[in-house]
Image (cartoon, rainbow, N blue to C red; front, side, top):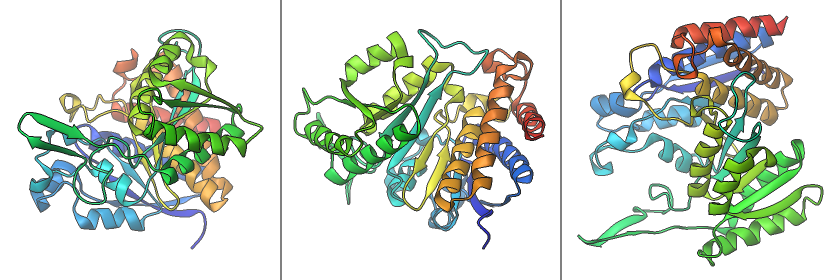
Length: 362
């Protein structure tokens, strides 16, 4: 098969998911046409639609479609509203991350022209978050759940931190920093979690020694939260464990302009899933007003991942074109969605991105 052909699984999800995945497909189709790519989309049902039809929010055939595809676009899911796992309420996001070993969650936060940062200086950083263990109870055990209640009045959560996971997420961070501004900040709470975060730091320090060209520093997570507010522009690549990365990435994205613009890629060695950082916003569902920018940006990251994995410049060109068109659309007040102070709906915004994409490709 040609390196310019790719099959992408489409998991629309819940709430605004179907609307923003449709908009994202529109932009992907336009980028593919401009860059000589052939994309095939394979829908896979998840979420409440799957629960009603199959008794589970992630049917095995849907997982198999993602596993067989070259990449996937995952719409937001309302997993907090799902029934217990025993009744079919699987979190598709967590299950895919664990099942496909998507160990790196890459979350950039960058200020866009015309949309000033919430505070401090302009932001251009990437948070590299470990994605498969930590306190996340649905993915940190071989069998069973990482949360349990020995009595009705006691709830216990178990966190696992492994040398393998810490080492490989650090390697992703240092490799990325080598391609950016050459600085890694490792975030931890080793003054309290002396063993688990101590192991994490041991691993990141070992990897740092293999990258002497990259500046390396360490910050406590509570101090890091304050420093992002003070001057997020001082940071380049931030690497950390699962829960800390989840929290700090939302903070960084909001500081850079809006969580509605926050792209995210779940990547492993053999698989990658593009996923918006935000939730399913059921109150906006079906009204054609949701901002699809986050998922479009995530899809661009997936195109870049495919280009790197295949050494195929056409995918990297499509990614760059999508990023530039998205930024141009969000920069202009007349082509913004309502959450950014504009007037456009979901479909109209996607159409504006496509127009900008065509203009930039000339």
